[in-house]
Amino acid sequence: MPVRVRVPTPLRRFTAGADEVAAEGSSLRQVLENLEQRHPGIRERLLDEKGDIRRFVNIYVNGDDVRFLDSLNSKVKDGDDISIVPAIAGGR
Amino acid sequence: MATIFRSSRRSPADADSADIEREAVPVQRAHSVLDLIGNTPMLEMTRITRGRIPPGVRIFAKLEGFNPGGSVKDRAARKMVEKGLESGALRPGKTIIDSTSGNTGIALAMVGAAVGYPVELVMAENVSRERKKIIEAYGAKIIFSDPMESSDGAIMLCREIIGKNPEKYFKPDQYNNEANSLAHLETTGPEIWRQTRGTITHFAATMGTSGTVMGTGRFLKSMNPEIRVIGVEPDDAMHGLEGLKHMASSIVPGIYHERELDSKIAVGTEESYEMVYTLGRDEGLLVGQSSGAAMIASLKLAQSLTDARIVTIFPDFGDKYLSTNLWIGWQEWHRKRTAVNP
Image (cartoon, rainbow over the protein chains, first blue to last red):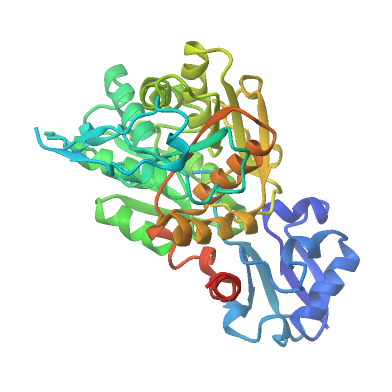
């Protein structure tokens, strides 16, 4: 199912500069796998060696932090809006 | 004048070199909070370094959390505002504005309150809650930029706001204002020189605007050109080291002159976070992630050296980050650590 993924500035080198890309899947995990196929290299920036979401990465499904949902198993449906947000602002 | 004497217990590292002495730190009396900026203490990292660095190497951290605004940024904020008042760029009727993800905002809000000027700050909405509250407590106004655009988004929104009303604002512009580096050339550098009795061999500091490493490095090299100056930055554009910049993928600050660095060290977010946990548990020091990054870099640097005095900067303490992602994963780390070393 197609979803919209908003991509933060530091990851746009993987999306040819696009701030928003399409991906598919019925769980967040599937969406990220699909994102990796379309934009190789992006998964490693989001997930650690154990496959968990990196501590400094926040992912929101329709505005809800997935850490308060079902993490990578969070369900997503057609037309959902997924945002990847680094947990910092950078530059003091 | 009353004095507080530091512990007279000598660390093992002192045994072979008595030239870095323990000092009495005077309790200061001041008439403005601005006069309390700087003269921060330096702490030798003795426990965390044990068995991890070559025996002839010592690591010292300057604890900038002791500044009244709670971070190294107090130094730059005071200097930039002073310079603005001197030149007339800041004068009655003007508002101080800048883009900042936190510590500079806190510092400018504090300095603005102390000199009686209004302050407006543009920052990405995802900075920590504590920081927003602190800034508001100093009476400053916060304008939020899109968190997706990171600090570069805040810089651009700030430009837009000033563009609409250029006469209203004084922008210290920490990224491009040489007064930022100058603050460190005039204060941080000389303090380190005095505190190490001129025996420092390496200076390593994390880079956000790069003001700390530029100004301090410049001073130290003027005293002894042999001193190596090292910039510390995140290892990837996508990182979680709030306050630090990955230079290759960011708007490069105008005050950053890479040729003045002898080298750079890249540090990972996760290793820096875990170093924060370690510093709490092993040194009794609760610091922010940039201090974790500074410590990681100092340990990496130490590996290649045999006889050296490394000085680094711990930009702030950790209380502002307790609600942030820095602490995600601490419990798991703590469990593992306790299982190995109860």
